[in-house]
Amino acid sequence: MEVVIVPDAKAGGELIAEAMAQLIRRKPDALLGVATGSTPLPVYEALAARVRSGAVDMTRARVAQLDEYVGLPADHPESYRSVLRREVLEPLGIGMARFTGPDGTAEDVQGACAAYDKALADAGGVDLQLLGIGTDGHIGFNEPCSSLASRTRIKTLTQQTRIDNARFFGGDIDQVPHHVITQGIGTILEARHLVLMATGEGKADAVAATVEGPIAAVCPASALQLHPHATIVVDEAAASKLK
Ligand code: F6R
Image (cartoon, rainbow, N blue to C red):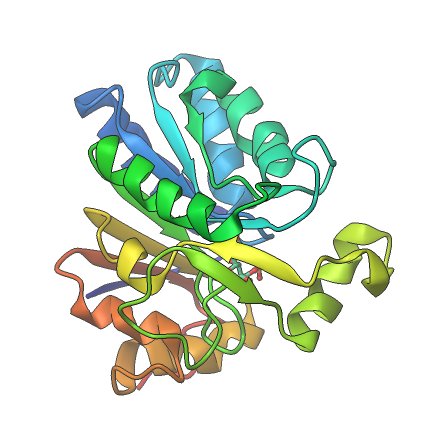
């Protein structure tokens, strides 16, 4: 596991965006796994700036979703599909035909989860998976005590995560779905390169547990220690509890 400490979120965004741009120059149709949330926004902004300046052409890149709410229509503004279309696909000039994600509106949700794992494998696997991390060490929506071998599946959101995410639903927790589909930890570990970004002091304990703690389900992100090519990009605040 490689840990890179950067001065701030903008520098982290530039670093990761350049790694993604280099991957796309080498392999134009690479499959990028993307996360939602606040942390990766500087990455997407830095990548979009490279697209606008002509430094990289992303039109052949493919994008895969990490997680999705269950029961929100795909065109709901807060479905992760909609969020990723706004924040990633449109700014990078990638068409929806090159996007894949789990179907959160399927009648057979378990079938949709298995179908998504198969779709990722059939697509040749994720080349680079970008991850954020929760203050409790979650990756995707794999909350503490998720199996480190888990596959894509339905999960119930903790009350804390629903409270955290209410900000995206006008502050109304009743609007936040109770269930999500998330890539499992075992699924995430199959990506060829994992890049976890964490910024701010609030992530410092989770980063320390991820990098220096035991590999344990109480900190799902600690599973990255098992991966042969995992990069953790942290700002100084998020790195502040590393020894
Ligand atoms: C979202 C996701 C989550 C977030 C995590 C951190 O797709 O996978 O694991 O990365 O909750 O969220 P932020 O970045 O908003 O602090």
